[in-house]
Image (cartoon, rainbow, N blue to C red; front, side, top):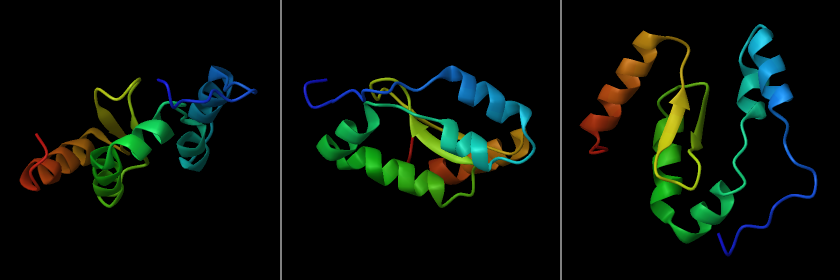
Length: 94
């Protein structure tokens, strides 16, 4: 928390909600935000490595949850999510 510098202009959930109503996924991916993620990435290279690994698996977007207890990926379908989880497990991610 000490290294997090909040942005002067906060992010609104309205942008995320609007992106869910739009066709396609590009706006949705750009609507995700976590102010704690950049400091966590600087302090813990494992966060960066996991997000990169998830990104290479073809989901819509990847992000760290809250203060970093987990990371998640948005997928196009339940099937894609299962396949991504299987590939992550196969590469050693619990």
